[in-house]
Image 1 (cartoon, protein in one colour):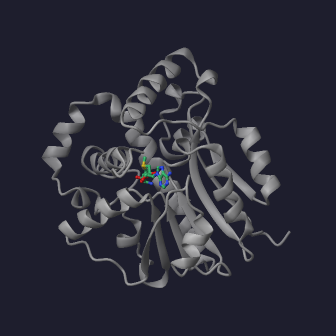
Image 2 (cartoon, helix red, strand yellow):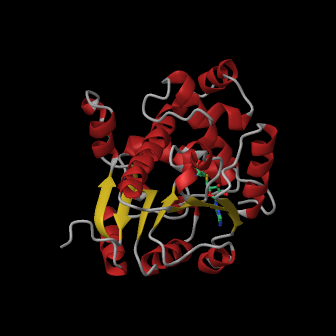
Length: 284
Ligand SMILES: C[S@@+](CC[C@H](N)C(=O)[O-])C[C@H]1O[C@@H](n2cnc3c(N)ncnc32)[C@H](O)[C@@H]1O
């Protein structure tokens, strides 16, 4: 992140969500506020997306990770979860459009400069905020999430669902593991969904070249990708922290789940979205 400046990659992710509404009609992930929060319109988004056709893969990945997170969150809400924390929220709109928003205690955590910018965009777009939403400005690499959440009224005794999308690759390992350790330490259990990538060295030459091109681009925005995981190691470390029911969709799994019929063009490795919980759901 550039000092005192809002996240440029948050804007890029929000643009991809808006473009998905226009170009794929929100087929994977419908977000009625995606254009409105950006103060833009469908023709503008279609034209801008057309200028960067290689954004297609990232657009669909962002649609898939958000859909996966919100499906898991809906199941958790059915089972009684009432506290939700959106970590590194960027321009995520879940809090303002969730059908469950009046039943939830919601916290949006983000880097202070990004959050201040988002709050201005929300005001500009006249998007109403639920009364149960609290904004919590936090720099994950310099501040303690637990302390900042506690000061904002977070109830650590409540089962809680954390979404953490598009953030882990930008954080150092200490910030990633201290956040996961905090989530795992909650006494009555928690769920988390986040995304990560396989190490670039393990990608096919073609995938690696396109990854490196994107990596150079985000580094140029002051938001370099610094953290990658091998799935097996990640799962073992999550289990050691107390997480179970780990569901990890790599490229092959999410293509077969969300794009049936496209199996022939599957990349082997790349982005993953993962769900884990410290709550035993089967009574075993
Ligand atoms: C690619 S954006 C993703 C935003 C959003 N979750 C989404 O999916 O659209 C990355 C987000 O991580 C946040 N972020 C990056 N480094 C951070 C840090 N050290 N502390 C807090 N937030 C950080 C940025 O402010 C930004 O909102």
